[in-house]
Length: 310
Image (cartoon, rainbow, N blue to C red; front, top):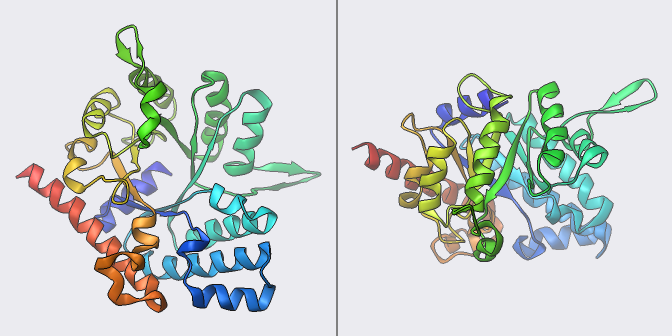
């Protein structure tokens, strides 16, 4: 799957992933009204509104980007109906030939990790049949329980030719409370990055590992360090746009081949119609606004990478 992701990045010239992290406050009133008329102001109605919102955005952007990243919490908050929309969203994106990164941030040990891995990346056996419940292509995982928490995921990834993005240095302001702590004179995130690279050595694609790392766009100097520590690991880079990251900040996250990183934007794209520069589209054309924001992001990152080459 890492080879497919790379091939799609090269085809689209867009190392960009759209974060499908919908909140009801992002959904235009006309969609909410229609969903509530059909299902009432219920969890089912909310989930249907999220689905219709997602579908329009996917339809307007799938040809521009290689991947999407649905955040499971945004669906879980609506209970069973929300999780059905999560699975429906994953399936629809895969029908559009998009690589799906499930942003689930799971992390536990032993049989619990094995169950998470089976549910999101692998298969579960029911009688004589096997099922792939959520069937994402990659998921995000939390490494802070150590190898006991990661190895069950890697085992399933090897079986299914799928991958992980391991949390190394996250984009949120308080990440440094733990991740920046010095261990033997070095920040903890460096140790986690080195261990992630080692895990990745056992599950390689043609040029990059299936085991990547999450490194936030809000810390460009960290990205520079991690790129050197993890030359064969793909970096999933959150924090673009709404959290302050810009194309010029991201050059060092990439290798000289122009690969090695994929940059996420969530509300900066899916709620673009609420931003001043895209307000002309209006709520009725929110998906066109999302497309315009995606195109602008691609141009920003491409311009920064081309400028670095020059």
